[in-house]
Length: 425
Image 1 (cartoon, rainbow, N blue to C red):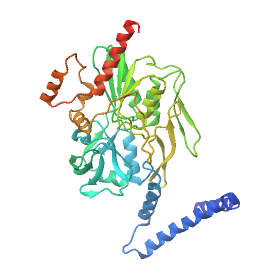
Image 2: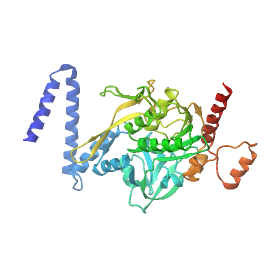
Image 3: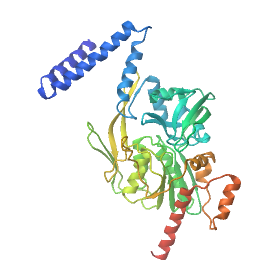
Image 4: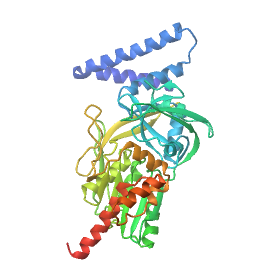
């Protein structure tokens, strides 16, 4: 009975559309294409050398349809759909990297701090060319995820092509249960607080607010927010985090798409830390939610943005559950900052991302060493001392550590601001 009703509904819709000459051609074309898909399915079932499961073929067809759209739209089989849900809740198994397809190549968006990929020195924009010796050419995101994830303690070999380096890099990684600790905070000196936000998961805004209160009680009057290698996460969490610093019901971000009307997200009337001087650190591993945060505060001149140009992931994916437990992750709109900027990177021109107010690029070698220096390199880097520079360089050479130039300059700027205020400038 239900099946009959659904078929009748589809038939009625087709007849209704075909009665309008303006859309008849498009409808006919769609119908013919659907006939072709059914024909291919029947040919596979009747003639393929081995028996095949219809569901497997249909899933493959769905994945193929989505693959031609953009790097961020995905068909998710039931297992991949379940794994995606676990990621946004902050815990999953694997290596700790966010990946995408960029220019048809499997590419690292960012490694997550505290994970095997991060510790071993895999970097944003590294291109994964092989997994366990198998080429990743024409691989889908869901296929890559299945290959990279596995039981904690198991090993996987990843071959990386890195920009600026001729030879491929081999990484032997041991999978772990990944628990995303999103917040790291501490006082860098008597007045400058530091918070690194690793990802916008469901509790990030609450944890961020708690970290701010703790720092304020410790004497914080200025703040550095580190969003380097933050791949984004949940939109509502990014918006809630912005609300801590932007008030007066200002526009934080809006989305708009071909079929989606403009949807605006606004601040509250008051912001708990609306007057707190701050610097935001970003790099090419900062994407999506971190770009919303940095773009909003940059538009309102609420914070100084420093570091490298961001990743440029400014599209909205709606996850649509399907009847068999699979899901469709479909790009339906783009993000726009309050001033109307879209930061989504154009695949053809390469333009996109948030451009910092102060650009500080670091070499890939230095970036890898910063990661290998461990989790505390960002939070425990000492404030720059006055010297002739030679002693600092000698110290780096002795202990093998590299300077975190972006963090040091952020501290210098916040200190200089207080000096200027005291001078009445």
